[in-house]
Image (cartoon, rainbow, N blue to C red; front, side):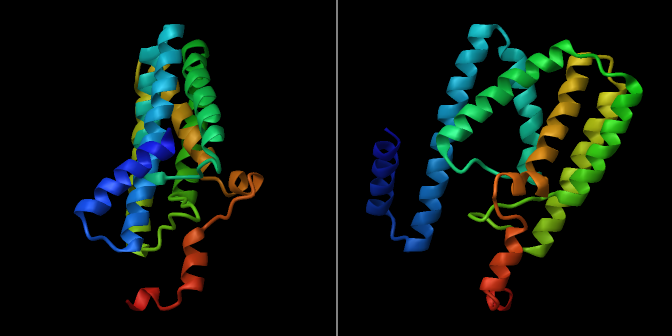
Length: 206
């Protein structure tokens, strides 16, 4: 099904546009990402509706993706692994957020650690999409850190246990996904922009 949809989209694009091979690969990668994301979202939404936690799941996913947009992080090497892991994470964590009560002092400690680690490790790229531009990396790091600082202040001050937990756990989840230890655990390369620049020494001169 995936190949059928992607191939038809690519044939249509090739028919009406004169893109080079590099551009076509970039478009195909984007279309594949959109397809997999849509497929994954549909399954997660259906399960959450059946469990009666759609609103909780939606809130957590939105908060998590706000951080994910600039901090990035590792991706599963296979689509089925991504589907299974995402379904478990986005169903189980909102349930956890609804049922746990974190002490205010523990919240403060966790928030401080979240800020430190997001500043230290973001943005974390992948070997397929290295973040080569130094200025862009700095912008992503700054925005990611400001987001987690904002999340932390709200989490500590808000009088809503579920939202507070979502803000904290979404930050923890993102910190896990950008951690060099987690990259190493899954045997994935870290700081991929360094490897890219080493293999393409003339890139910065272009």
